[in-house]
Length: 365
Image (cartoon, rainbow, N blue to C red; front, side):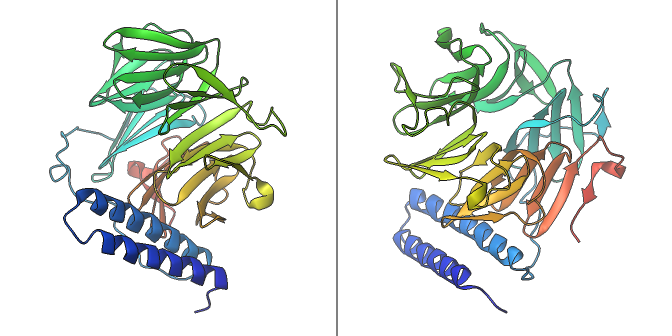
């Protein structure tokens, strides 16, 4: 078994980090235990990716952790049904994973997939749903209107905003609504217009406020009182079209149509096709763990230990949204439907626009 030097160093450093954190969590501090679990999950995914890239055989992992009853979820009776599916191959626009249920919105409706039973339900609507967010215990979807998801139904929610919803984000007591015409905050006081005339594409919070990306008008930071435009002095147009945002471990991850940018609070790092991105058109970022996953129009990659690596069997797929939960990776795609990667196994959960018996097709071989 031959590992290159970088793989040995990366895995060795990961192991040291795990042992250090485990040592720090020797008491009953639940916060430390949570950090240790996140590191273990993230580093395990990174190591598995390195092993798969090096074509080292690894054991498969279970696709589902626990039943609905064990996770305390209400039972939703999902049938493998498609009500008036739209023509063509709709794009998966956003995704939310709640234990064994995967919610996805696409161009024309809502999809709910049960990881335990492998059943799914699709609710077709006459609009493109583009955003999902959990807020105050409810799950919301956004398109031409704002909806609360109740079971498999979309219940209209009263909210006064302009334009069509591109992004939803839970921020303290407010549900932030980013639309093609501005940024709005919905809370017990009603709906407040925070930013007018902007085509909002993405939202994420840091320790000091909100980052707001737009399509065509640049990147802004809101400190709770005012918005300040942020840009690079060497080229103030690089952040004009923000396609994705995420924040974790004191780093902001910014996707654009000209590559990925990482901000550590003091300087910006540029990552493009020259550094290993399959495309400079970044579509989605998941920085919830220590391993950052970046979706592009030409493939999915991981960013770990300052290295870009193609994700096994996902390196050439056009990914529109990526989410990680523990050691499982979920991807919504432009043409291939909803995909789950667990260990080395890559499975199409739902691609109802192709003929698939029972809505389940395995790509692992």
